Amino acid sequence: MSERGTTPHLKLLQEADINNKVVLMRVDHNVVRKGEIEDPFRIDSTLGSLFHIVSRGGRPILMTHVGRPMDKKTGKIDCSLDTSVDPLVAYLEKKLRIRIDAPGFPIQPDLGITHIDSSIQESIQRLKERKIGAIYLPNIRWFQGEQTYGPERARFAKGLSSMADIFVNDAFGSWQPDVSTFDITKYLPSYAGFLMQEEIKNLRKVLDPTRPFLAIVAGAKYDTKIGPLKELYQRVDHMILGGVIYNTFLSAQYGVDVAGVPEEDIDLALELVRLDKEKNKIVKLPLLVESKDFGERKEGDTKTIAVKNFRKGDRYNYILDADPDSFREKAILDVINSAKTIFVNAVMGLTPHFSDGSRALYEAIDENTRALKLYGGGDTLQELRNLCPGIYMKGLDNPDCYYFTGGGTVLKALQEGSPFKIKPVEPLLKRYR
Image 1 (cartoon, rainbow, N blue to C red):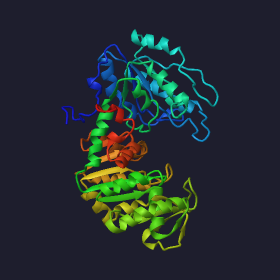
Image 2: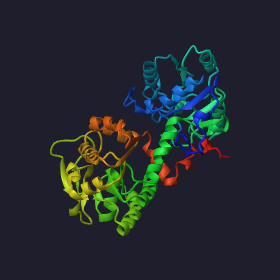
Image 3: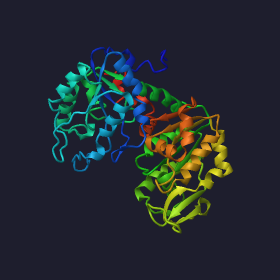
Image 4: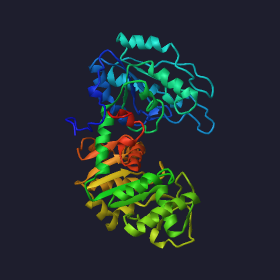
């Protein structure tokens, strides 16, 4: 363990020679929806690294992705205002009281930005002369090559690296090995930013928890979380499931048909059912909310159903939330209140119309004042902030509470068994080859 409390294997931003150098910094500011910033938490979490770079004479160029502008089936890139970085630039200029250049590049229909235009050199020169405080590149996923594997990928990586002297990765939430998180490290000296360091440090508390360890996981799709879910199951003392993940598990265990649960996902869930039959770690929420329609909540279309009444062959409409009374049951409360470490990557209901289950869950967790609480993921934090603002704000200042900026990255690290096996993190290790 180093003096800074981070792993000695990482190449740290504070060790880099950045004076009078242009620093390309990858952040995860993916918080814009329909042109508006939902929650600036992820942005504010990277300001420590940004201040450090500037205070030591570095000239920062920021880059992030916003949304999913590329259709992975067709490869077409939609550079619409909905996925623009303009709201991020406006927020940072107001927050930091600096001028930020947001250079534009020629955009080709369906192809996005095909190359880094030479006009960027004018902004870089202004940055070096300190006429501006920073540069913020367009949505990095607007660039052709960022997420593809043709010759344009290497071309984009070389073009991106040509703008800077050093690369800093502070985008913990972006675990996919794209050009801006992975390939760029082949061309520039690369370091972990302060947020990346802090996230990895807190990940150890999930990988090596104080027991009893409770994990609460919910999600919209089972197949995307089956790998990390199985790995997490091996590490926990108890687990609570929610959302479609829980619906899939129940379908597999009881042989019931729940609307919206694919047959192939039920087959995948059978392995977890067999595993839990031996180890009995999954604590089942007893009461759920069934709805005739998927989406908007309509009076008379919902009812509470009890898991104890499930029988093989039963058919159910959409199960869209956990009934809040589930979190008042003694068996559930005992598990939550006895836990010493609680990992939460869970929105229990279909937002925005089914939120009672999530609110009851977050309130129940808050009652346990002795546990270390680790919340993972933008969706989880957004729901916590919307439903329980007091609990959310209290957690920001609580040393026994930590908010991960990327829940998917936490699950990926669990699946790999280590944060250092995540592709964008590997090149930040001192012994990486």
